[in-house]
Image (tube, rainbow, N blue to C red; front, side, top):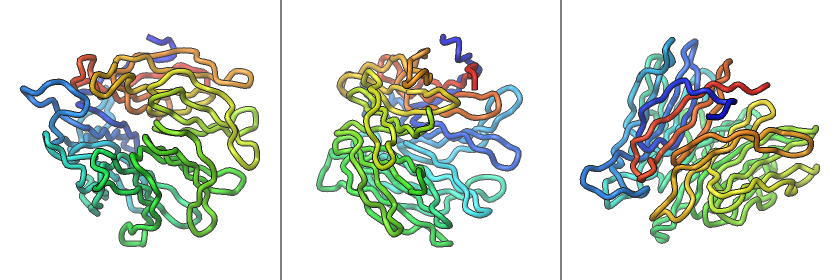
Length: 355
């Protein structure tokens, strides 16, 4: 085990696809979407299982996390917590329903906090939904949906950016996509940018022109999964996770991002930044039909002019990483065992790095 990470708790999850820390009032929570349950009598496989899962909402107690609420969320891929004025929301992305055959056309539900629990607020028709991302530009609130899969091209749908109208979310702009995974919003030099990750098409950085998002530059040819931004040496850097190739680190030159460093090795699924450290969680390597799930994920530290791998930690079909709290804590969601079953733990660590 890495000396930078000390394991604190293990949370029983099944096909966990994310881990979202959030606070309401003085209470701390984690939201964990779950893709699938192991279906008895079926062969192992990352694309199998029973999609009839719940989103876990866990509450922080003195001795760990306890279940606070279960929200029906079949084929759970992502949970996005956000607030608009005094309203509190939790948007859940559902990739599919069923237990074979599977159906990718399903609703993904935005929930609203009623003071005690989350209740359904708005159902959005989606297709293989994988992530919601909330962000603000000026006084406007946007909610971006990453969706799509090329299994049935004739049914596929592009990704969509929704805008808050005051009473709900309405489509604002469609973004061309094929197998969309992720979004990342940030601002640099007074300009808003939105990075979009796609598995089979290009991953693209979009720029807000005052009225809509326009393409600014390409970031990865294919295999895009996630992004992170951080400042080092007085410059903004943009990390791009790639599942089937090396991940990439770009540096802002005042008008564009230029390639600064290659982060060796395939499997990149998600990033988190804390202080001068970058966490990279790796998902699988090899074919989806026979994947290697037991991998080492990396902790990089900025040294000199580049990221240097300083530690690694075990993941098992790792899907997400979040750094939170005063300690701080690091939550890592795992989704697949070594024999490609879904029941595996999400792990909470204490981080001992210098911040």
